[in-house]
Amino acid sequence: MIELQDVAYSYGNGTLLGDVSLQLAPGSFHFLTGPSGAGKSTLLKLCYMELLPSAGQLSIFGRDVTEMNRDEVARTRRRIGVVHQDCQFLDHLPLTDNLALPLDVSGRDASTEAQNLTELMAWVGLSARADALPPQLSGGERQRAALARAVIMDPEIVLADEPTGNVDWEMSLRLLQLLIELNRMGKTILVATHDLNLIRAAKAQVSARVLRIAQGTLTLAGADL
Amino acid sequence: MRVFGKAGHLLAGTSGADRVVPPTGFTARLTVFTAAAMAFLAVFALALSLATDRLATRWSEALARTATIRISAPPEQAATQLANALAVLETTPGIASSRALDDTERTALLEPWFGPDLPLDALRIPEMIEIVETAEGVDVAGLRARLAGEAPGAVYDDHTRWRAPLVRAAERLRLLGLLSLALISAATAAMITLAAQAALAANDRVIAALRLIGALDTFIARAFVRRFTLRALSGAALGTGLGMIAVALLPSAGEAGGFLTGLGFSGANWLLPLTIPLIASLVAFAATRYAAFRQLRKTT
Image 1 (cartoon, chains in turn red, blue):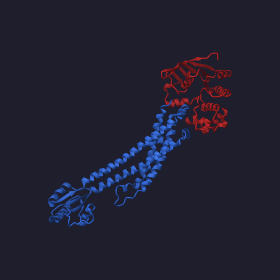
Image 2 (cartoon, one colour):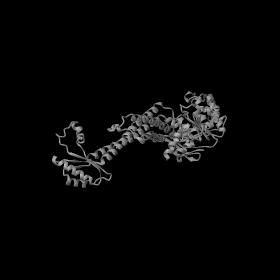
Image 3 (tube, rainbow over the protein chains, first blue to last red):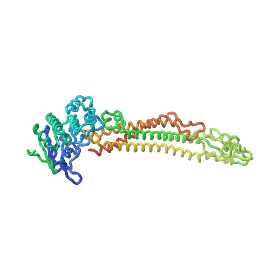
Image 4 (cartoon, each protein chain N blue to C red):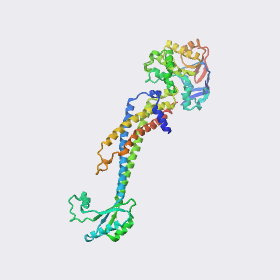
C-alpha cells in the first residue's frame, strides 16, 4: 500500500532521512519510534505526501508519488486517514462540521452520512461535544476527534503522529483501543510515538511491528522494548 | 463560455466550500466599500464617455452642414455683391438653403463681445450669408471660383478651422472616459487581489489543513473566489445605484445646455451602468482566482 525504497529526505544542507526502505502491507500494524527530532513525523509526512522524498522511490497504492499531479495527490489523501500531532482543525467550525470536512471536500453530502457521523462521534465518545468548537475541547477530546475525522472516509490506511502526546495514560489506552479496533477492521495502521509503554500495551493485544528511527536510518526494533 | 460556466458553478456554491473560510468582518467591509466606491466612479466615467460621444457627434453633424459667406466690400458695392452671391448660391448644387442675415442677427453675433447696444451705423459690419448644405455637400473649390467672379469680396467659411479641434477635443474626452473605466477596472482588480491575498495569507493554516484532508485546489479556491465575487457584486451594485441616482439628480440639459449639464444618461443608455456590477464581479472572480491558485501552489 505504501512502499519506500531507499528514500532520503534532506532539508537545506542537512539530511534527516537516508536510504529508508519500508513496506506497509494491507492490514498491518506498525509503530514508529525514536528520539525526538529523529524523523518520525517526517517519515509520516512522506507517507501522505506533505513532503516529497529528496531521493529514492515512494509509491502509494502502487503509484509513484513523483508522477502524481496535485489533484491526484488530493484524491490519494482521501484514502489515507491522518491523525496530525496538532489535529489541524478549523477552529471556527463546530466539532461535527470538522469531522464532516473530509466528506465535504470529497463532494459527498454530509447530510446523507449523518448516521455514520453520529455513530463515529459515539465511537470516540464525543456525542455530547458535537457542537463544541475545537478550542473548547480538552487534549484527549481533540485527539479522539482527530481520529474520528481520520476514519470518516473509511480509509485503507491510518497514520497517527504522536496521537497520545498530550493526553494522560488512561486516555492513551483509550486511543490505542480505537486504533486496535480499526486494525481489526482491516485497516493498515502506522503510529509514530515515543511512548514505549503504549507500544508494550499494544503488543500485548495485537501483532505489531516496531520500527526504530535514529540518525536517519530505520531499523526493526528487537525484544528490548 | 468556459468562464461563464465557472462563474455559474461558483455562484451556485456548495455548503462545504462556503463554511471552510472563517468569517472576516473587516476585509469583507473593505472589499464591499472598495467595490462600491469604484462602481460609483465608473458610473461617472461612463456618463462622461457617453456625453462626450454625443457631444462629438452633435458638433460634427451640426457644423458639418453649415457654412457662412462673409462679404467685405466697399459700402457702395456691398448690396450688389450680396445679391450676386445669393444668386450664385441659388444655382450651386449641394446648397439646401441660403439666406442673408439681417441687422438684428448680425448684431446678435457680436453681442457677446460688444454688448446689446451696438450701433451698426457707427460700426461697419460685413454682410453675412448663412448656408445649409445638402447631405451630398458642395463643391467648395468650384463655389469659391464662382464667388470670386461674381462677388470678389465674398469669403466662404465652412467652419472647418474651428470645428475640427472641437470634435477632436470631444473625441479625446471620450477616450479619457474609456481610459478611466479601464483604470477603474484595473484598480478594482488590484485592490481585490490584495484583499484576497491578505485573506488567503491569514488563512494559510486552513488551506493547509484542507489540502491534507484531500481537498482539491478548485474546492479551496472556490470558497475564497465565491466570497470575494459576491462581496464585489454587492458593493458594486450599491455604488452603481448611488452613482445612477447622483447622475439622475444632475441639472437637466436645457436648450442652452452646456457641457456639464449634458452629462446624464439618455434613453437606453441608462441600462449601460447596470453592467458595472457584473463587470466588477467578473473582475473579482478573475483576481481572486488568480490569487488563490498562486497561494495554493505554495502548499503541498
